[in-house]
Image (cartoon, rainbow, N blue to C red):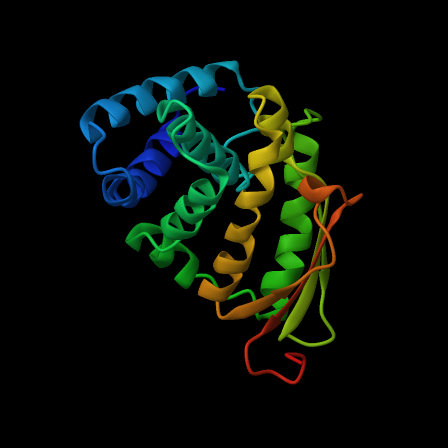
Length: 213
C-alpha cells in the first residue's frame, strides 16, 4: 500500500487519544519517543501490506489502516503492553473525537442506505482478491430498523498473520460494537473469523426499536 491521505488522516484521528492513554497507563515511558517509533513502524507496515483500493470505493481501507496504527503502537511498546491493555487502547481510541464524529454522521437505519450498501459491497469485494480485503455481504432488513452484514473474509486477520499478531486481532473486534453504538444501533453476533468462526455474522438493529430484544 501507499501512504495515502487515508493513512495520514487515520494516524491524525487516532493517535492523540492513543498516546494520551499510553501516557496515563505507562507513566515512566518516553511518550514522544514511542510516538516517533510507532510512526516509523506504521509507515513500514503500510509499505509491506497489499493494496485493497482507495477508501472512497472501499471504505474498509480505513479499518485496515486503523489496525496498522494499533499494531504499530503495540510493537513500539517493546513487549510492555499486555493484551488487556491493547484491548483497552482499542476501546479508548473509538471514543476519539474525530472517530465519534465520523460514525455519528452515519445513519444505517434507512432502507435506501442499506440497498446502496449492497451495491457498494459488490464494488469493494471486486477491487482486490487479496486476503487483506474483506468479502462483505449486506442484507437489508425487514424494515429500516434492522439489517445483516456478513463478512466472509477479514483483512485485519490477514494483517495479524502478516505481523505475527494473530492473538491481538480478536481485541480489535470490540470496535465493531462501539462503532454500531455510535451510529445509534446495537450489534448481535454469534462468532467472528478472528475467534475461529467461518464468518462474522452481524445482526444490527436500531436501539429501542421493536427488533432490539
